[in-house]
Image (cartoon, rainbow, N blue to C red):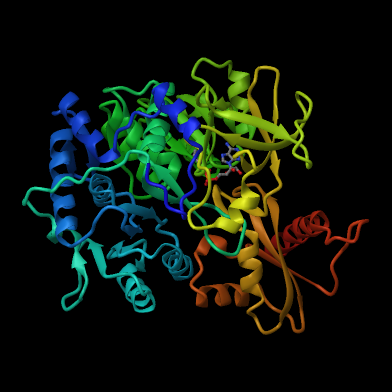
Length: 546
Ligand code: OOB
């Protein structure tokens, strides 16, 4: 077992149990691809636009890419920042890195310089992989700025054509037919790092091992009954755990199914692909599901091949949940998961009422969960408390975050999810809220502390609090509450965050100015009162606009 001080691991006895009981299969994700290829050589594995790759072709592409990366000098344990949209290059590059033991750090395409620079500082990647451009953003220009500020990045690899004269390397030019010197990889070592939604001003990285991540994907695929006839549409950004491995791409490939890559998540892109490829399974966040439900009222694209729609990432309203079978013509599954590990699913044979009203139960028998009060004592059955968990695919700590890990995990190794849940009679969990300082905007997580700190960079803002406000479209929106020396507009705040190269989804949706904070009886800032005022003022503004 490779243990680096930066990557906390579970006690040996727990690991042995997971291995003995076959939860951990002692396989590296890269070598699994050749096993899948022997089982399903001529099945189509991946489709992007007009290109379809069989399992045999996918393996060949991956071998050429890993040989190319190896010739570039990448070796086991190296970190590579990957910021690619849903594309063949994403999947091929990641599997190539898995084969080499090189660790991809999966950044979202929506992230901007401030996040990427902070992640580089935390993890010292030797390479950075970007598209040339995506949704109007110039990633080559961004990479130039990132590289000039980074001490570790030696190579920038670009997916797609490159401007002449650039010192960066085109990803496809790397591919090499020279045989790969296959390194031996410890299956309990880190395979990839996912990003945490975070609660602090600095980002956190989630190290997932070959063993735990494969279990995550395969057990999810079995629970969802995926098979060779499955066609999975990857709609959400595949750097996210949900479409990547719950069961997502890796789960579908583990069963010989077909993955169709969707370049953007709206119904305009997704519906025609569902019709064309007879898609059977996909996963969405609630805000997108609402858009799909609305679009289906007027769009007559044939999406009748859909069998299962997974919805997760944020609380899904029971009213919308109930509409899914009728409007979209498929079964619904609610998924309550986290990049740190634990996944809860409603089961395919659960009664409709449980599927509409609950967020399901843990994936496997060895998932341990407890629901506790503020003193970490278990609450009575049916009561609300914080969810804590540990198990075969839940991390033992964030990467290179010793101090934060002391508070994010209990002394007996349970992850404090920060989610408030209760368990119903049937044993399913219902998410009732959260205690962590995070805003869940359409499934994208905003660390309150980060934005509060950034707002203070404005010369006229003296104090800032970011609060979540319920929103009919987004689930939650964010409102910046400020105490300032001069009036500050929302536009100015957006400009400030733009200059700081912050991802667009983190911009506050609303701003309110105060001259003093409302306080609770014990003298703390009353965030509930702030959120209430934000709700009232938002209605006024919207009405003013009508
Ligand atoms: C998924 O992962 P993350 O890491 O982006 O966010 C995790 C957090 C949870 O702790 C919870 O606060 C919230 O997102 N969440 C939900 C939810 N699913 C996630 N809140 C209410 N209801 C749900 N169904 O979001 C994620 C990872 C894997 C699968 C699905 C979602």
